[in-house]
Image (cartoon, rainbow, N blue to C red; front, side, top):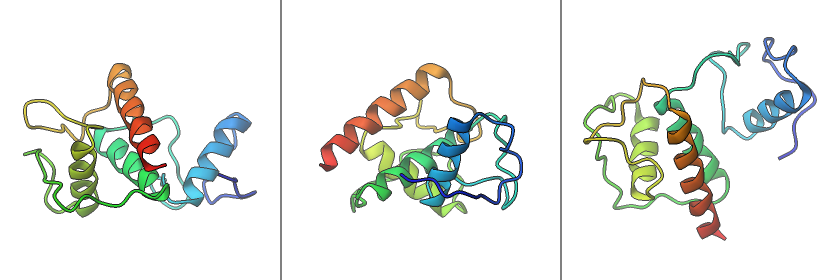
Length: 130
């Protein structure tokens, strides 16, 4: 993904060039967003909900089409967050994010081992799109 030369995020200028490029590129195709138009908040922790949305957007940007029979298996995903409902159901159907005891725990951060699992499973799903 090519990164645009500029961004509206005013808080990434002190990051290394590789991080800035990644943020600009992923934001330009809609995979990641800031906390608002001018703030990316690069030092904030990432939640399970935010991760689900980003991974889902990445899959869609690579050609993934929703599985019509994907069901919401998590009892704690807010009904008023349509994007998270879609992302969580689709990622669960693909085995990317499986939660624990019927819960996604959307406001909790991911541990490093959980993120490793999510990324590995997402890469396997992407390979299946080819």
